[in-house]
Structure formats: C-alpha cells, structure tokens
Length: 163
Image 1 (spheres, helix red, strand yellow):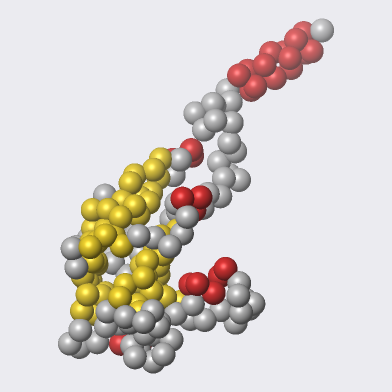
Image 2 (cartoon, rainbow, N blue to C red; image 1 turned 120 degrees about the vertical axis):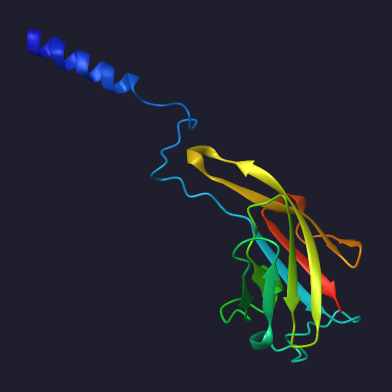
C-alpha cells in the first residue's frame, strides 16, 4: 500500500510540474513560420530586369546598416506550374531581415548602380522563446512601396521596385 501511495504521489508531482508558460505547446515540436522579405526589380513596363537579363544576379551585392546583411537570389522554380503561386518569387532577391525595427539596405546592382531601401518592422514574440521582426513598411525614393501579399500572409513581404 505504501508503494502504491508513493507512486501516486510521484505521479501527481510530475503532472504538477508541467509549465503553462508556452500555452501548452511542446517546444520540442514547435516549428513556427518565419518572416520573409522578397524584392523584385522591374522596369517601367513591369518587366523583371533579372529575368530579361538586364541585371545579372551574380553581380549584385548588398550592404546594410545592421550586422550581417545578406541576400539570396531566387531563380525560377523548376517544379512549379506556369501559373502557380510560387512563380511570383521567380527571379527575386530574398533579403535577410534585421533584428531591428528600422533598417536600411543598399543593393548594389553592379559597380555603378545602387538602390537604397528603408524598412520598418514589428517585433513579434512567440511561445518557446522564439521572437523575430516582421517587415511592415518599405520606402524607396521617398515613396511607400506596398507588399503584393495580402493581409492574410503578413509574414511574407514581396515588393516590386521600379528602376
């Protein structure tokens, strides 16, 4: 009988040690979506300048007013259907988002041409100690540039920059 009571007591102790700090989420299984920032460079007619060969993505470099600015060129998807949603990211630049509420990128398209993009971001804190900044605003040449994505997808910011 003593052993049964001891086991019952240990069981109650273990159950009472669970934490509600993460809203009942098992942090070892928590896999949140992270914000993304894409830039499409176009001419006055809306033609993608990387796709038509005007800009060579191999010549692009970036600088930022924060530590570790960087980008990744997103080539055309070889798996997507011609009209698939993923196609809107073909021939874009994926920029790394700063851990700051205001940050600036200078995108050097070649040795002589650069563009300066100013961003605003909102801090978001998730369960399990995860936090990040979500891009909310882009300014280029003193004009606000809207994201092409809907409010339903606040984590993905896709902007078209007309050069």
